[in-house]
Length: 472
Image (cartoon, rainbow, N blue to C red; front, side, top):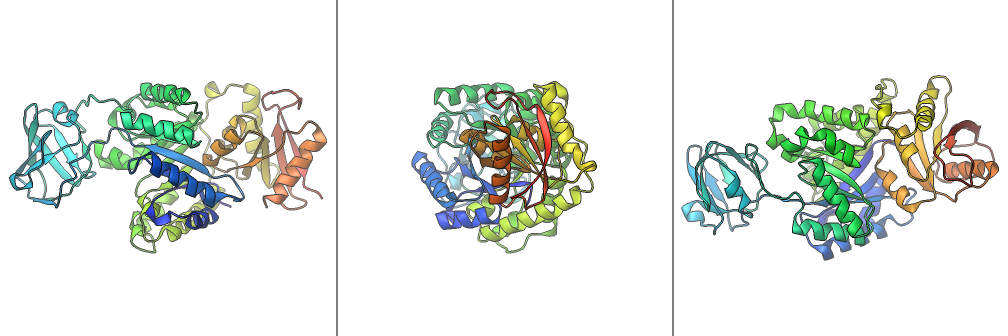
C-alpha cells in the first residue's frame, strides 16, 4: 500500500461512478473539481458522481474544489492567429478583429497593469511578447517568437503589478458551493499574500464551512510572502504551470524543493502538480523524464502528487493512475533505506508532549520493527505530525469525527478509519485489532504501536504510546 497520495482531476474522461471507482481501486485518494470549467450545477453533479463512485471504498476519499481565481485570458475568438517573430499585435479591452491582428482580453486590468518594455506571456509562456506602446484601452506588443495564438489562452504578466483581487465574484460563489457540497478542501489559486488566506477563511466561516485551505503557489508575490502563507494556510500546492512562467523556468526545480522542505518544516501537507504524466493524455506509457519527475517528488516526501488533464480529459486515465501508483510504491521502497531528516521545529508544535510522543513513535523502528502505527485522534493533529516525521510504517488514524476523517485523506502515509470513541483500555485495544484486521492493514501476530490520550472520558492531547501484538 503506497504512502504518497494521488489526486485525480474529475472531468469528461472519468464522468461516471464506475470510472471513479476504478480509479479509487487503483490508488486515487482525493478527487479535484476544477472550478475553472463549469458552474454550480456542474460542480454539484461532479460531487454526486464522485460520492456515488466511492461508496463502500475501504478508506475515505477526499474532494478538493480548485477555486479558479482571477485567471487572465484572451478572448475566446473564432479560429486562430499565426504570428511571426518581429511582428506586432494589439491586445484590447474592446472587440477582437483577427484580420487587423487585434485580440480582446477578459479583464481590463491586463491593459491597465502593463508598462512599456515589460514582458507578456501567452499560453503558459509558449508565446512571448514585449510591450511597445500603452493606452487606456489597448497595448501594442512586439512578438518575440513564431507561433500560433489560440482562443481563450492564459496570459501572464511577470513584470507587472496587477491590481486585482485574488478572490473574484465567481470564486465567492464557488466557495459557497464547496461548503454546500461538504467538500473537504479548497485550493486557492493565484495567492499573493497571507491576507488572501485570511479572506478565504472569512468566507468559509460565512458559509458555514470548515474546509482546509490549500494555497496554490504560482505567483512571484507568493514566493516573496511564502513564510506568512505557510503559517496561515492548511497546506500548499506547487502549481508549476503558472509558476514556471512567472519565474525563470530554470529556477523551478530548486524552488520546488525549497517549498517542500518549508512545508515539512511548518508541518503542512504539500502537493506537487502540473504535467506530472502529461504525455499519458495521449499515450499508454509515460516518458522516462515523467517517471523521474514523479519519483523525485516522492523522494522529497511530498504528501500528494496531482494529475490534471491526464485524468480529466486524457485517453488513458486509468493507466495514468496505475502508472503513478507504481512509481510511488517503488520510490517509497527506496526511501525506506534513505530516510530524510525531518525538518519540524518544535516552535510550530502546540504541545511538547505530543511532539515527544510523535518523535518516539517515528524513530522506534530503529530499535523495534512494527507493522503499523495506530493513532487515536480527535483533530487529526497527531496523525499529521507523525506523518511529517516520515516513519517507514503506515499510519492508521482512528477518529470518531467524520470531518477530521476526510481531511486526513491528503496526508502522506495516513489511512483514516472511522471508529467509536473507546471508553476503556480494553475497548481501545479491541478497536485497534478490529480496524487493523478488517481494513487488511495488519495480520495476526503483527506488532503495532498505539498512541492516544488518557483518560478516555476527557478530551486531552496525545500523551501515551504502547506496543501491542495483534491477536484473535
